[in-house]
Image 1 (cartoon, rainbow, N blue to C red):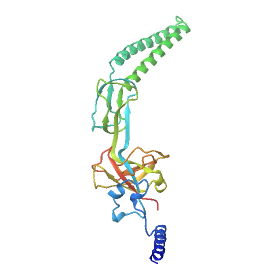
Image 2: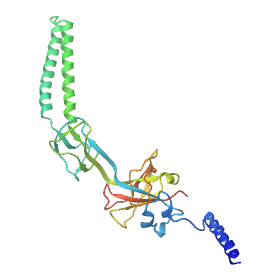
Image 3: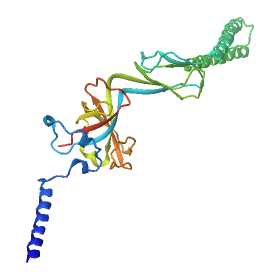
Image 4: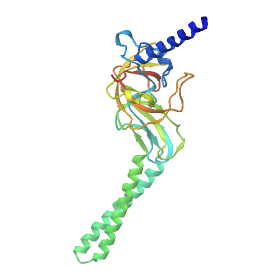
Length: 286
């Protein structure tokens, strides 16, 4: 008789629990949702701005809003860094230079040959007008002058390429290499960042992509500044999914998932530095 009473009671309890989950009376813990890092537990939403639904959690990295890795256009040996890490530079200022002694010597010779060829062209033109030089002689002098001009111009361009300038105003965040080191063309020499505004490049799990859009509010918790939150807004989203490149220490985090990059512009960022890891909470779509 006792078994007959217990079994129907258990069945009724299961039916009631299923009904509660389906109607939203009970909801799963955010820590159990796929793609949510442990930030959901470590950094709960503030009561005054708690979202109407589960927030979208992501890992991110702080960056300058405008940032560039700059390399030399030509190969050679590093002559010097004219700016050090942390220095502010204006657009067009020289940050690093390659050795140019041999190029400068070649350019001096090329300019001398160019000037001589130009004088010969003018002389031949005058003699042609007097009927002394033939048209063929003048054409040859003109061709030699054009070749000399082109060679001098090419050396001037190579000499300019040996000067590595800042493409925009900002701070030198990182330098690579030492004076005397040989580098190939395109090898990064420094990282430049405009720190007047900062952003967080966050990776949104593919399961959450449909609940994130440009303009959504976000909060950022840098790992290095425990307990401090920074306000921001999703500025833009990547146009395609990619492989995950940022990872938290949560043991249940999916490492093989696809992610969508979201750039979050921070309203104010005192104390933040590019390169800091952060946890991000984005308000879901309503």
